[in-house]
Length: 443
Image 1 (cartoon, rainbow, N blue to C red):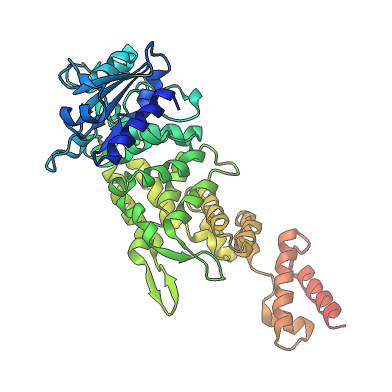
Image 2: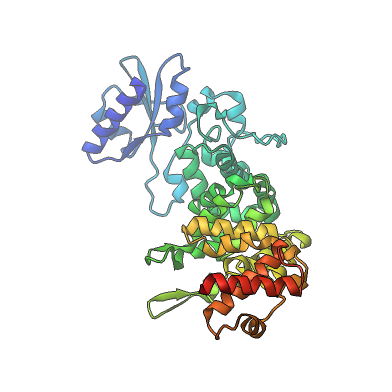
């Protein structure tokens, strides 16, 4: 911290000890300005009037500027005192003086142009996506000038800052972050949903989970897609041990895992992952110590359609996302040959498999059904006549002279596998196969 700021803080503490409120005006900006200042100068906002100030600091004298109350030079540092807004009925933003004429005069002309202050013009937008942002080489996302004032010039910058932070995986500077949080309602009031989605479209699929988390933490998601934000209030079991997790956190984990294994650039698939459990908000029930969400996939598809229309998605994208939400549960259950065939007939079935995989990774669940379905997925290419054995149970018992029992079913399954493998091709070879299998099993 600059020595001038340290001494200014000492002055503020003196005022506070004497019962008067005081603070250094916009300390981060003044710290920046002091680095290039010829003479160190710090502006302070304080509560006492001029007479009281002189009693506490005899060197203080009247300042010619209309907005400043007094100034004082101490140890080669110039301190300017500005009146602090103390009226109870004053607007909250008036309680914090964020810039003074002397501070504005010391700023870089380009940054000064962006200030929304009386007497300062606002330049026309240049179309540069990085306009209003400081260089990212500093290791954080930061608005130029005063964050709140820069944001007032274009509230879309709030969403753009979240986009940059997610894509580049770097933090947002604290004062910029607070400006975004303070302006969350105004962002939703003044920025069209189409403009927000244009920014969202530029978020990489692999970064989208971070972007949605930032939208939530900045209190923008709650107004933009309240149905998804509300999933933070819905719990579900993460594993068989009964550990619970809120559905919103689970959704973000799913979005994190989905773009892996060949889906790195699948923006729409990752977006479908955002909505895949939205139906749980409307179908959740707690009974006998357990959460249930029956038909959440079907309900979720209908809710998703409503949300996407509100966000002005293209009709073809709406149909695709709703299709994925509606069928995302299909691959979770161990399927028969007929079930596998019906699943593979669905549009976008590779995306549905990726959604099931991401869900399992997020829950650290069992892969038994998933691996079974993956193993037999190729069987959908097998001709239907090969999906039934050449001998049924009664015929197997007749040829092997076995009594009804589990072994008959085992032999039937083995016969079907031999048919698929090409080891059994006709009725004669089927009879020979079951007789030999029975002999080895019984003998």
